[in-house]
Each structure stands twice: as structure tokens, then as C-alpha cells.
Length: 177
Image (cartoon, rainbow, N blue to C red; front, side):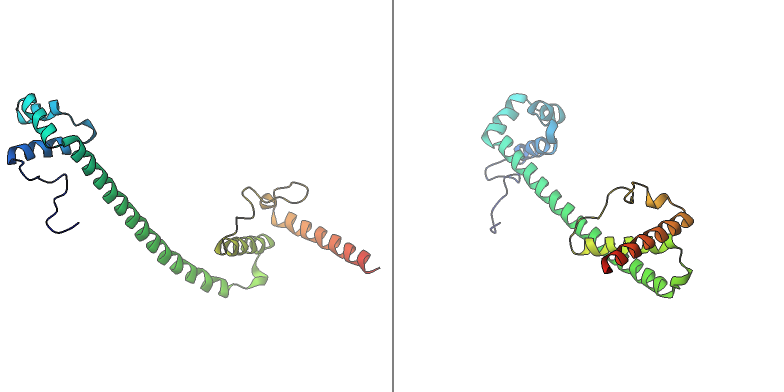
């Protein structure tokens, strides 16, 4: 805004202090604003307020004020979202460093098949999201027979992995012939 320029919701040239006070009350009433409400609040004649409203374009000025308040609010929301994103990124980095340190201390032989499977799934999911790909699945992971893999016990997973291993070996031996 150029220096010396008056915003439409500020006191205008030729507008008396009383007329501006009445406009400010009207402006600040928000969506419920009306000349009748201002007349009641200031104990002034509705006819006088109607004349000031027309002379000093209250409706247009209040609309401009509302738009400016919306613009400011949206800017505050955007800044708040940026602040939250920065805070969450710092938190995620801290959590990641702790998780990496813990992962490096793990002994793979001590992990159950379900632990290994879950680590692989989570790592693949993180990697896919990092490059902008969609998640692999949205529901429970299922094998080719429709069984919920996550619901299997470690023993059932071992048996399933052995079955898959035998199937893979069979197919490889058939392909070698």
C-alpha cells in the first residue's frame, strides 16, 4: 500500500469521528451486521446511520475488511502449517536417528520371521513414499490364497516360507532341465 493511502475500512476523508465509530461497530459485527444492530448498540437514529452508511459505503468497506481478514487468516494458517511441518520434520529426524541406532544394534539371527518381514515391509514402504510412489497396499497383506499374512503366527509363517522355498526350488529345477 502506498504511503498516505487509507484502507477502505479505516477512517475516510470527510468522515466524522462519530460516523467512523458507527462504521467500526458495523464492520466489527461480522456476518450479523446490520444498521439496526448498530443503532441499538450506539443508541442512534436508524435514519442517521442509514445516511452515513450510504454516504461512506459501509457495505463495500465492510466487505473489503472481511476479505482482508480472511487473507490475513489464511496467511497465518499457512505459516502455522509450515511451522508444524518443520517441527514434525525435526521430530522425525530425531526418531529416525534413534531407530537407526537401534536397528544397527540388532542381531538379525535374533529376529523372528515376522519381525524380518515387518522390517522389510516398513523399509520398502518408506522408500516408496520417499520417491513419491503410492503405498503398496492399503489393507492387510495377503498371500496368493487370500490368507492374511499378518495374522499368521511365527510358526505358520515359517511353514509358509518353507513351502514357498520348496515351490521356488521346484520351479528353478524345472527351468534348468
